[in-house]
Length: 277
Image 1 (tube, helix red, strand yellow):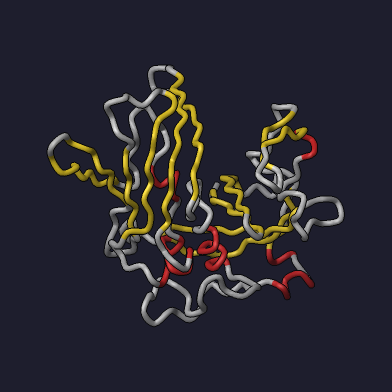
Image 2 (cartoon, one colour; image 1 turned 90 degrees about the vertical axis):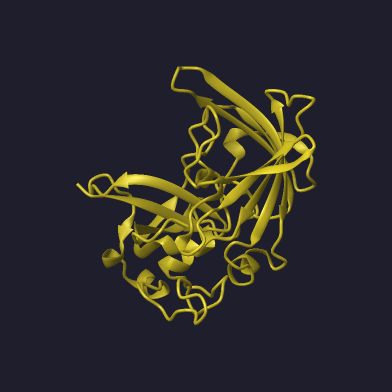
C-alpha cells in the first residue's frame, strides 16, 4: 500500500499530514473527480524554468494564482517552524528521551533575518553559502549558566551545490569563537527534532503534483485538550480565549466556506534523489 506525504495549503497556513491513500477513509476529492472546480486549478507538472536558477520556475515568487503544486511548495518554504523575519521568539518544548526522561526547555531566541526583500530576496538575491539569518539564543529552562554567553547560530542559503545549512559559534576565552557546522539531520542533546525540523526543507528537492481538493475544519495542532489558551489580541496584549472560539485561520480570514471550513488542495511530493540541501 503506497503512502504519500500530503501537504494541504491555504493562504498562509500549512498542515502536514502523513496518510495512507485508502479510498474508504479519505474525505478529499481526487482531481479526476472535480468538475467546474478543476478549471480554477493549475495542474501542470512542469513549467518554464528560471534562466539563472533552473530549480525555480520562470515566474517570480510569490507567483500569481492559480498556483501549481510546485509553486505551493515554494510558498510553504516561507513559513517553517522558526520564522523567516526579524522577531523575538519564546520557544517552549518538551522531549521524551530514550531513557524515559522528560526534557523540558524554554528559550528566548532573537532572530535577525538578513534578506532586504524578505523571502523573495532569500530566493533570488542571496547566493548559496551567503548568510540568511542569525539566531541569538538564551536558555531560560534549564537556566543559562552565568559564565556562559548566549549561543549564536548563523544560517546560510543552500542549494544543490552548497549543502551546509548553518553553523554555531562557540565562545572561547581569549580565543576566536569555534565555528561548528550543523548538518540538517543533526540533533541537539536530548532532542528528537533535527535542524531541518525547525527550518524546513527546500521545495526543489521534490517533484510535486496535485492530488485533489479538500475542506478543513481542524488541524493536527488544533487545541482540544484545554478550555482556553493565552494568545495576543490585535494590539499585542495577551488574553485568554476559550478554545471553542478559536477558528482555524483566525477571525479575519476572508475565505471561510459557509460552514466555517477552509478550502485547500492536497499535493503529493516525491524526493528527487539529488544531494540534500
